[in-house]
Amino acid sequence: GDSVTQMEGPVTLSEEAFLTINCTYTATGYPSLFWYVQYPGEGLQLLLKATKADDKGSNKGFEATYRKETTSFHLEKGSVQVSDSAVYFCALGAGSYQLTFGKGTKLSVIP
Amino acid sequence: DADVTQTPRNRITKTGKRIMLECSQTKGHDRMYWYRQDPGLGLRLIYYSFDVKDINKGEISDGYSVSRQAQAKFSLSLESAIPNQTALYFCATSGARGTFSYEQYFGPGTRLTVT
Image (tube, rainbow over all chains, first blue to last red; front, side, top):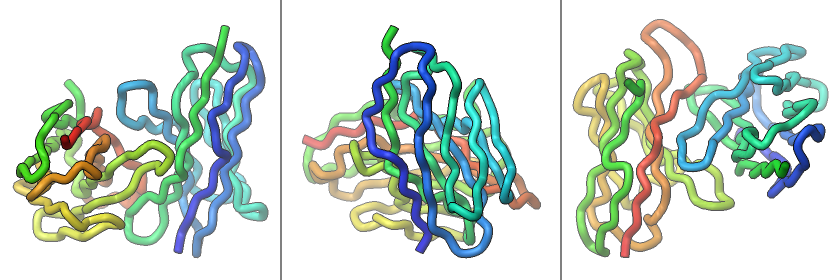
């Protein structure tokens, strides 16, 4: 079945550091890929998405590129801020309109 | 106003009680979902519905039931709550009629504690 594996946290970075959160997937066919973010006390919000190979999703300074050859969709940001502290979920959509989520990576950014 | 609302936002109940969590959406979406979130386990799908007459079990449906009262309303019930159902519960919606998008939009969550 479909699955998503993302790096375990927690991840702690200093403000302005470079962020990478790794995500790899297993799926049949050509899934759509997503990153969601969950700020403390809130629901999940869509951060970015990519629907086909080599697409790059971007939003709020975050980027991720759909790499079919390595089945990966790593999240990156060049300079994190304290306000980026949250839990980040990688997800894939394939087949019957369901999303398969990774277990989440908690990011803490310290001043 | 929020597109996806959940009530209640917090609930404490006792073992054996019946409880209902409600979800409403104003996005005009056909597909609705219920998830639970537990620390270290991510989100797990409980039930999903593609329209009022189409309801499907997810990964962890045992101990739960749902009702799709209308296109915009999807309720989750715990018939006899037990402590290991203590979790954060999310409703999500997806897919305006005629679209094929996988994107889901989440409500703010209900924190349920079963004592």
